[in-house]
Amino acid sequence: GPMTVLDNLNFTFPRGQTTAVVGESGSGKSTLARVIAGLLPPALGQFFWNDAPLEPRLAKRDPATLRNIQMIYQSADTSLNPRHNIREILTRPVRKFTGRKGQELRARVEELMDLVDLDRAFLDRKPSELSGGQKQRVGIARALAAEPEFIICDEVTSALDQLVAEGILRLLVRLQTELDLTFMFITHDLATVEAIAHKVIVLKNGQIVEQGGRDEIFGDPKQAYTKRLLTSVPQMDPEWLTEARARERSLREAQ
Image 1 (cartoon, rainbow, N blue to C red):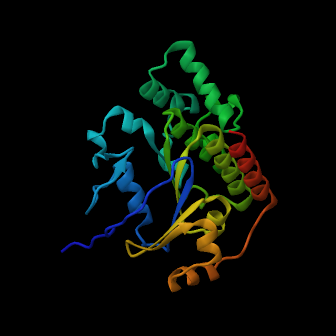
Image 2: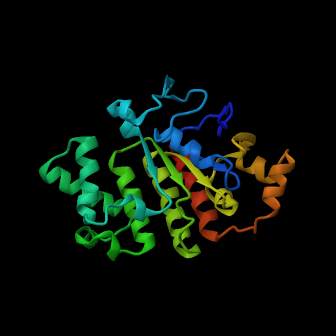
């Protein structure tokens, strides 16, 4: 029969945290993202969203589910309409998902630009006039337009150079803390995972090899496959991450 890309996966995404799904190319991680996003039907099993079964087909999902689950794509180019300026790109989802109109709608679009640290002057530009990092920030703003709870980040930094990628990661860490977002972070870059994930799921051939807290997976991996994956990675701990984590901890303790 047809190959089952994802096989009896059993996992949860803790609310307000980042769960990284890692694995080599072909491990099924992007398929998993598309299934949750409703872009592909699951071969087996069922996902639950807030304890209710998640409708597999995007077209049949209710408005609340559509709003709550958003996706940021690897290449902003494929997801941003080149003919529209940034204002139009952000106005549509705000109108569609929140029903805002007129001045309130305009104000929200400007607020989204502020949230992702983009100058409002960019609103009148088209995607082709923006850099890769700026376009990715627009992609993030567009996902935030729906005011979601859960955002799937599919290889969102892999097309960017390291400095720009760090800026995007820093932004995501800040937004998560400010807006209490839950992230599913798909990547093959383990340095990124170590930087921002709370929980890690290791996939191979559509099956979970190992899952656990970040420190547990990086500090004491149980499976040979995970160990092999980890040894192939340069260690990085940029200072901004250490600072971001400390800030996140103090914010959590203050709540």
